[in-house]
Image (cartoon, rainbow, N blue to C red; front, side):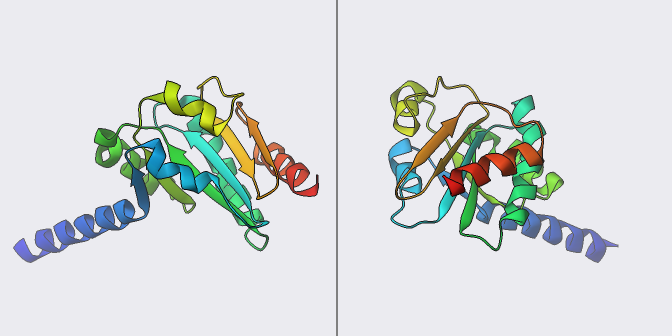
Length: 162
């Protein structure tokens, strides 16, 4: 019986470690800002969200679905959590595991929003959810919740085709 509980403890520790390894953590916007630049034609879809944001949580499955829809195209999805670092193990990792998120997840722990939100977009008031699409030649920012995967995929397609 002791061996069983030890095996379960090791398994749970490994799951937590795997989830944490897949989440990049940036303590400051300056560490993160290179993510918002590219020299390629790849379209980046960056969604800013948090576990405490109900509309964010509602739309995350649409980003996961779109990630699968566009997997054969030059489109990359990054989900940027604005949760505090102290929430990483208590909320973010369990949420990622529970919802089986496969997209790249980043935790941005810079709570000095007034300094950096304009660097993402001058149109951003700071509310979430918010999404940035960009390539080397163009950028589009929206501060809205997508109502379904179709709306999100259409939004991405319009950006790619414009």
